[in-house]
Length: 182
Image (cartoon, rainbow, N blue to C red):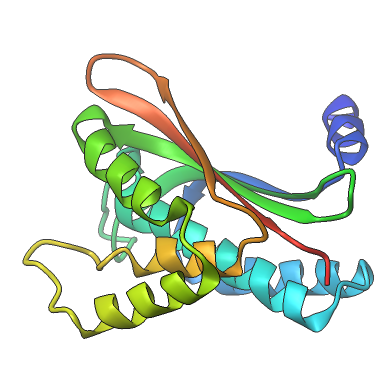
């Protein structure tokens, strides 16, 4: 465990969670994250951006992770499994990195949604966000991609993402968002 602790410290990781995630656990983790950022003496705008992106990424795990622990009588709903890491790059920018299992059949749609917004300007992202908010949500959909757009709006550079093939049915999806310190 000490080796893991030292490795995280050496890589400037200030927060790391891997495992099942429930909606109810986000609040406590969010408070801890805010305290960490206060200790790091991060500006208010950066703190709000990092916190907001963290919430969006955890929501994506809760809504879209294909890895889940089933519902029981003790739990209101199933838990979704993923990983979220927050750290500092060498230039002191923050990154929020998230990963979870997805169905291979979902990859083309997810790739299209990210590629659509990756190179848009802040003004174009703002206009797209407003447009999507006015749209009716499709039946069975969990949103209009607003979370991705919101992350791109707060990001200091284009969203980075990848898929790691697991097997014929699943891949591991990773998305990284970088936020300037101030």
